[in-house]
Length: 86
Image (cartoon, rainbow, N blue to C red; front, side):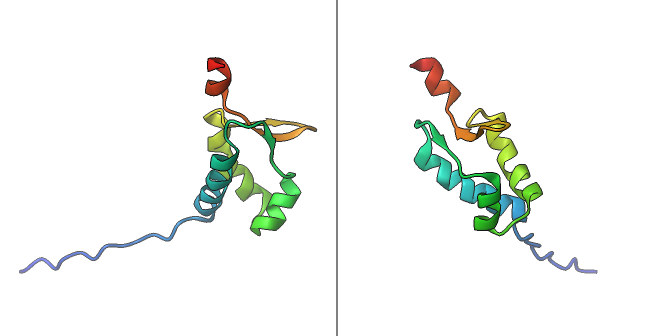
């Protein structure tokens, strides 16, 4: 019996991954500057996603120290490494 070759199964990118990539593009431009991101509501409307999707997409940036989220003050783009070096 000859083994049939397997076809590659490509998984489409998840919605969170798409939002993550869009945010990464935004952050590259703002990195090194003390820029405040638009309000969560505005980003949700602009990107056309739910708040949960937006929060999941921003979580890795917060863990890397690129975003700082403070309740009542919004989310800021920060680079803790650059701050430490300066």
